[in-house]
Length: 130
Image (cartoon, rainbow, N blue to C red):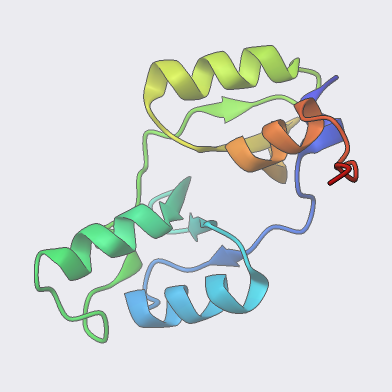
């Protein structure tokens, strides 16, 4: 199975000047654990995850004043839609992260998460007789 078969194609994209509270509200509303951060001034794509927000709050920082640009991972590892799920899982394990931004010809086309991979690898839920 390939990344294109597992990835979410509806990607939450936010800007670098959103507050962490705004980012968290958008992520919660979309029920996603990561947002792609597009910073046209910096010329790149980053990723903000629920863990980044949690770490900031855990440090006592104010989510109403902290900006996504200060908590975004910018050295992002990208996946290609044609990668196997094994390649994606290996990359996540090696890098210690749970989300990969998927690029196709330089454009963001999706995000694949550990949960997406598990959903593809796990057998369908079956009724267990009692």
